[in-house]
Every structure is written in C-alpha cells, then in structure tokens.
Length: 306
Image (cartoon, rainbow, N blue to C red):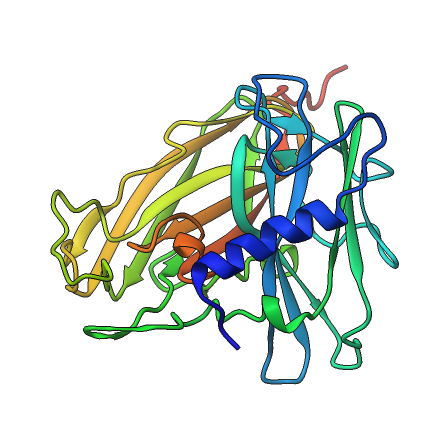
C-alpha cells in the first residue's frame, strides 16, 4: 500500500515523536537544529516485502548538529535491540536529514507486532525509534508509486567498475559491500558509473529549467577509526549518453579518498535521480552502496640486515 508523500512525511514525524526516548532533556521533532551539542534521531523511512517472503526496513536519521558530523561507536550509545546490536548502522553520522542510509532484513516469520529499536545517544540525549510493519509505512523503493508521462520512475543503476557488480535501489548493505585496499595518507582512486531512465515529473507537466545531471552522487564516511578526506564528496558525473530529462542516461565520475590512519573503513555512496533526496518524500528513487576499505600503514618495511 502506498500513501501520499505528505501523509508519509507526517507519519515519519509522528513515529519519531512517539518513539524517541530522552535521557537528558525534552526532545521533539520541532526542536531547532544548532551548530554543536544537539541530538541525532533515527528515522523510519518505511518497510517493504521481498520476493522470498522476508521483509526489509529502510532506515535513515536526522543529525541536528548543522556544523558537526558525529562519530558514535557501536555499543551502548549506538545499538539495536533486541538481538544483534550491530545491524549495519553507521557509526559516522553526517549533518542534516539523511534518507534511507541502510536497510535491515527480517525473516518472513517476523510478526507485524514485533519491533526493532535503534538507540542513539549523542551529546547526552538518547533517542530511540522503533521499526515495525505498520501498513502506514509500507513503501515501494524500487519503483515510483505514481506513473509519469514515460512510465514508472526507477532508481539509478550504480557500478564501481565497467563490468562489475551493479546496485539498484536503497539496498546498500555491509554484506554486499565491494572491497578496496588503500594506504594511509595516500589518495585512493574511486571510480563510479551510473545509468538511469532520467524520468522527470513536476506534477504539472512543466519542463525543467537548467536541469542538473540526471544522477547526483554523495560519497561519505560510514565507519572507520580515522579521518576520511574525500576530494569531491559530490563527484560530478560526465555524461556518456543522454544528460537531459527523459533521455536515458549513462555517466561516469571519479574522485579520490584519503584515510588518516590504518584500519578498516566503510564508505557510503548515494546516487539520487531527478526525484532528489529521499525521492522527494516518496521513498523512491535513489540507490545506495557500501565500499569496504582496508587501509594499511605507509611505514617503510625493513628487510634483511645484520
């Protein structure tokens, strides 16, 4: 069942208000953002059924710190309950509203009355939001719920190699992450390619003026022990085909990523189409992927000797 965009957005706020628990102060969805010292609230984008009978929760968050990205290690301050406290959530939280950053799939036996809860404690405030299969949150992230002039909009197809694995929809998970290696302090090249139907609908059949790229990328740190510097966090795509609304699009982009220290890192990539961040509130159409990077030391090796 697909609800209108406004209804789903209002339901999201209601869920955040009803599910958030506070430990240090009263916290409401209308609490204004500030540069530093604010809270981070989990966000329930919705859930959907899979062909094998399992169900998937689509989850994001809202970081009210407008000038402060926040690192919250897995543990009491960043955990799921009940069950495994690590369900693939980020430990590095970007500023602002971040839609559908990860998914978690539950078995087909998961009852509609069961709940999973993500708890985040940031700057002394604990926010908890439950996720459950309410009909009001049933979404269709793999196809737009409303048909446009050229059919139903679909999410972009994202690749990291010309013939490599492809990702479609906001389904990026750690289990399906691609792997890379890097050396601390040395920029690691990151190449991306995307295809999209470039469907655009204003709701009033008005043309788009000064159209941006049909696919826009956002690359960010997701997990890791050190600082991550991305040369172009919003790497611009070069069109190989199309480039205007309703023209099938293919494009490529490149950037570099530098890691401050050795360790295991994860990068998060979001590919938005013309529907924009969070699909404009409709839960479609964007694509996510995770890149796992093993970063080694740049210290020289000593061999031999007397």
